[in-house]
Length: 234
Image 1 (cartoon, rainbow, N blue to C red):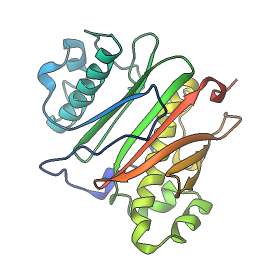
Image 2: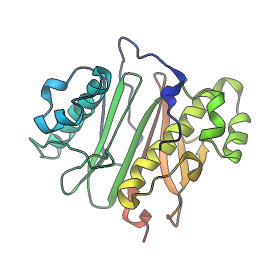
Image 3: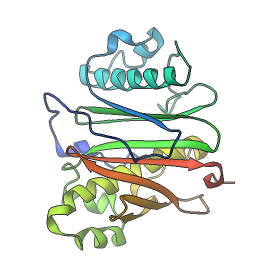
Image 4: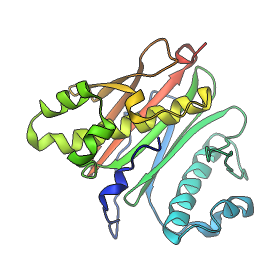
């Protein structure tokens, strides 16, 4: 989603990040892992290293940490020595029979993987829970979403704004491999179920709402969505 980035707020990466618990974001069968961003560039395959050869060190470290997480999860699926490259849209090119998603924000990286079967696409996203400031809300939220947000206790609004942002990013990542549709934040209509830590997303081209989960932990908004075969556009 190119409309706006939560990093526009200028949040600094902390010196150390304790990875939060990612449990509950996905159904059974999805492997998920997180780690503090660090210099894992030495473990990149040569072809992976080429993808970020001209990037600044921060971007290289984010990229390499995500690849390290993906490599560890692929090994759990029995896939080893696989160079995780990217297509022309920078989307990861997963091995045949594998679906996955990567994310990073404020010194944290996360990955989710699963075997393709009943599940056909994944989206994971992590965001700084304090980064989606009110001046960004009109760009990220639909009018009904902003009304919902402003009706919540004032102390909760900033973190819930990050949940909206993160959930729309996760939905975008999940739908893109299936549709190649470049959606903006306003294209995705979101309903939060605060009591359950869940959300429903209305997405162009999908006949029914997509369901996902969210959590607010360790200063991060964490979201996940897993699409089943019946969710995919015809």
